[in-house]
Length: 226
Image (tube, rainbow, N blue to C red; front, side):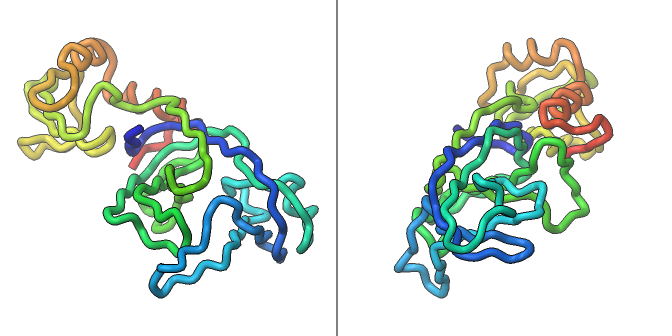
């Protein structure tokens, strides 16, 4: 699957047995079952453990039993119960990124939990996951805004203005105008199906598409994409 900014996904990961290696007020550390130490990493040394936030409501992984009942040496299970997330950034690495563990990821997604709005003013927001990076995620697409367009497509809008599409929140008008295209849209060039574009935008608007996305992502109506 090719992931895009704005995608709303359902994520889960099977719970896997592991051992607690350390506990403090903020974190519980466990042996990480899904990665191996990368002996060829330069300047990076991973100790085979992962620290999970104990009091962080946005922690993606959870332990069974809950982390507040764990002590060093205990056995537990770590996984991700099925939940909704949405993507705010997509990063590809060629060659794969050197992280200190194997497999080296070639793709990472910066995600937010359902109900958490993107904040353009925030320097640090979200959790990074690496599909294909060793952790056995299941990722199911729930909703994709502008699913009928492909990145790089050009369209004409109802006002006769030409627009370039690089994602649902990154429209660029060729005449330099600000704003978003007025539906219906007509495909000018690109990989999308012209009939699908016309049919999908025969009714509705960009604002209505954003509202559909917000609802799928569990956001309040005033939450704005970035």
